[in-house]
Image 1 (tube, rainbow, N blue to C red):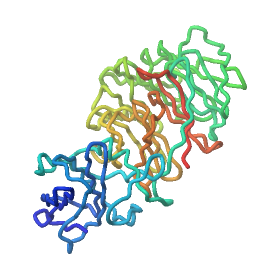
Image 2 (cartoon, one colour):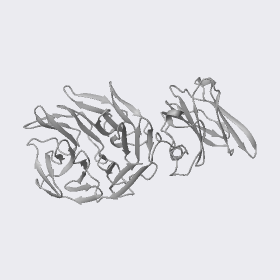
Image 3 (tube, helix red, strand yellow):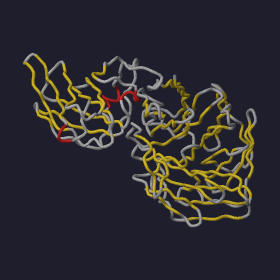
Image 4 (tube, helix red, strand yellow):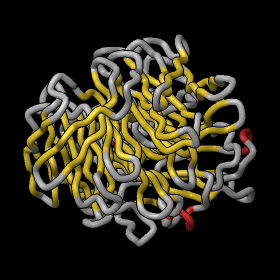
Amino acid sequence: MIPRMRREILFALWLAGCGGSELVQLDFPALGAARSAILAVTEGTTVYATAADIDDPARALVMERPTSPLDAELELLLYDDALAQLGLPPGAIRRVIAPAGSVLPAPDEVFGAQIIAGKATGWVPGMEPSQDVRAFRASITGPERCRPLRIRTATLAHGPDYAMALDDAGETILMGFERGILLLRGDTLIAAEVSGLPDFVPYAGRRRGMDPFFGGADGRIASAHVDERRVVLTLATTTTAAPEIRFIDGGISGEGYEYFALSLDGTISRILPGNDHYYRGTIEPLQLEGVYGGIVRLRSGKSAAGASSSPHVVFNDDPVVTKPVPGGVTAVEQLTGFGVVIGTSDGEIRVEATGGFEPLFPTGIPLPLTAIAPFREDGLLYASVNGQIGYWQPATGACIDETDGLRTEARFIIPRPRYGDWVITGNRLETHAAGYAIVTVD
């Protein structure tokens, strides 16, 4: 166990090798509300780890290593939960060969230090676990630990501009690039026959209620009727949003069906039958290369929108309200039990709070998070700009997939309750084609 008082805390590291033993020690940083810790020491690519609960009577956290090089990387992973809640026993953590075993729990805070020429440096706060520590596999198992993700991938000719489930069970998934629309039923991918509005080019889409709807390059909005193989487009309203719609949402209001659109120039449009309202200049123009963000309808007359080009979320209500966000906004969703949830360019998931957005949990992915969806009853599934996937539940904390992930950028995560899985899709990466993945968790 580890005492809480900074000056009473010593890190003790016995360097035991052929030249004898040497004790290296240094003060721990302020532990705050942490209740347990993992100390990881990396020599080259080999990681040694030990765990302890934080408790006043103890005097030091001690680790004995089998070799004694002069240099090593130290990482102190702090947790707000006790080891028992994390499913970890105290003491040395036995390493096993991947893919066996479990990843270490995602920490609430990380400090880093080094041993250089046999001397320890001071602790640096605000770190992320290193790649070697994230790849560490422990012999611990149990229902409350992270379970592996199973990922099946397939390539697409183009990265989708839009993707959605056509029913609550996820029986059919619609994915499309401009007017090229694909329907995924189970494992079968069907190229749809698209008709209607021949000059309409969809750039964004969503489904709320019965039929999906799309926002177009020219600002028009179309609805679609989908059967086994055909998609028929019809004009949804005679009014238009600002051109180059990139994100869209909608629903039934007291004034009829309303749509909210976020366009490439940053304009947020609210569209009503026979009427339209613009809120201009509230979001910086979206970046043409890598358009990340989103817009969600919260209730009649109100939406929340954000983009990677802008360090705030805009709630277009009466009056318009903006809430700051560190970095850019790379995903926007409204999820049951969480409210408005955003992904950020700093790899955070934040939820709406008084005056802004607060981090929900350490995600373990230090890259822009570009897709978020519900995970089981109480969690979230999320993915990044490079296709790395993670999931979070209160019982497990964040669990990160350490394989090659999607091999494609993640833009959309679509639950399929009918099959017990999720479809994740997005644009191509530099070294891989566009595609989609079907993801399950053991």
